[in-house]
Image 1 (tube, rainbow, N blue to C red):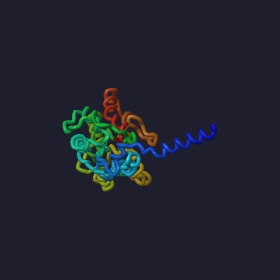
Image 2 (tube, helix red, strand yellow):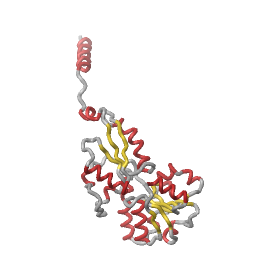
Image 3 (cartoon, one colour):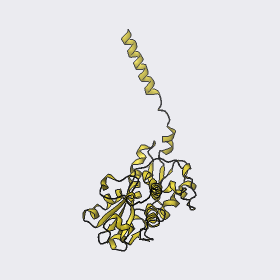
Image 4 (cartoon, rainbow, N blue to C red):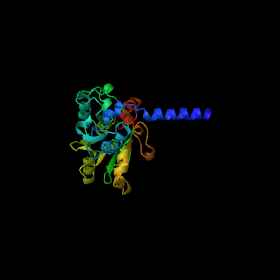
Length: 270
């Protein structure tokens, strides 16, 4: 009798489960068949693009309803127009997200007058990695050591006025007396690296090490470039023999300024 009652109860439970409709998922219902715009605050061919593309291919599988994701680029002015656009005109319904540049939330601390966004009102979803940037020179440049950057003139490119490249280079010029001449006008990392290869510039600062080792590994292998310096709050394990900016700093006051300048590296690909 007990066994018959148990079989009956189990059968009844199975019947209830089989006939109960699946619970509605309003999030999945909203996203199903939709397209999310991933607004990238950088040009194609650079490090931010290299991270945005796999995100666009795979992120949709982890969102209920599995929406498709389309990448849209807005790379001018260090990606600040992209951040402004995301804040002011981007849809607030979850169908627009941003792959912004790492310095974006810190511009308010720098008193940047061109921003209209409030970084505290963004919903920060996460970051793909932390980062260390490097200073590289072409093989025929006279610079052999990090210390040469403070004594020997260097013609270098710029990834943009609001990027690590120029912010950090200007800090080296103003705080440490580095005789660097910054050549502006190149659009993004790819154009700067082409200018370096063609001899239009001697070096480039502020390129993420992850980009250099994956996209320009042949340059490293063939000795076409020299990595002289790394900039980050912590040294990269790949670059144990490369000095950090802190190795060149002479005072605690300047060290504290560099702590603030390099803080964005922690959320390198937000």
